[in-house]
Length: 333
Image 1 (spheres, one colour):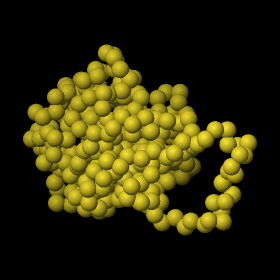
Image 2 (cartoon, one colour):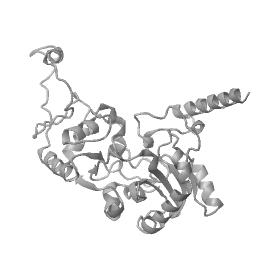
Image 3 (cartoon, one colour):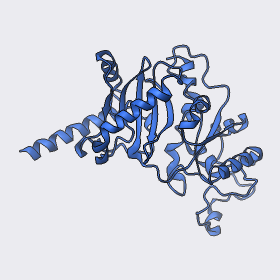
Image 4 (cartoon, helix red, strand yellow):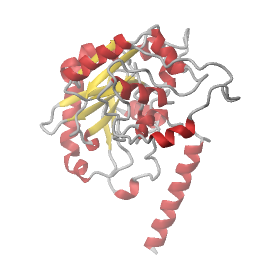
């Protein structure tokens, strides 16, 4: 893999080409001071001061009596040095507020490549839905998965010349509460040929996919041929799509081939084999409840899980498979 292939998967690179067939998105270049704020772990966890007086946790109940327990008296031994004031990014905050309002009042935020899915638990809604700069800052500051974008984006590149891109961007994507996970898919392209499709949410069995599988396959193949093949420059990559109720296909994301991208219901070796065997596209879905692998509903983003041989997840999945086989044997007996 080369750096240019990774760079093409940045949302600020691909979105302008696919704007007409993607989720409405507004993109802001982030100041370096905000990036350094995200990376700074030398002091206490501080959220930026809001010039609009917005709260990152608007639904919390504040109890002044409890807050006294966490106050350090002046001259205390715990006060080793004068604490730094919280940061503030007034210009960025005002731009983001304007964008959020133009997108309907709620957005889904992400950096160049990744979204802070691992910190959704900390939001008042338990999702990545944000209505203010303060909520975005809370998710980003709490996320470990964004460290990939900030420090490790090029780790798998054979021509790696830097640890990070020159600039970082915040993508604000319109929030659609009606989106259903059963209609999101990952598509695998090798040598500019669509060779595999997997349902994106692999921890749930969706009966509707069995009914619509053939129709969905034709829809996805047509979309790839008409919109993606000639417009995305890499030869090997993956792309995620969402299919609406009226059968419109929307591009959600692009990811590099291999590296930190999950193959979901495939393995990368299987995909190479499918490619070498012929031109047919293999479409994989969970076809019964027994095929669901338990335990993968974690706060960690799909693309941040290490399931390689010998990893903790690899051992867990082996144990899960053994337990499923044991239960099936007992049921059969």
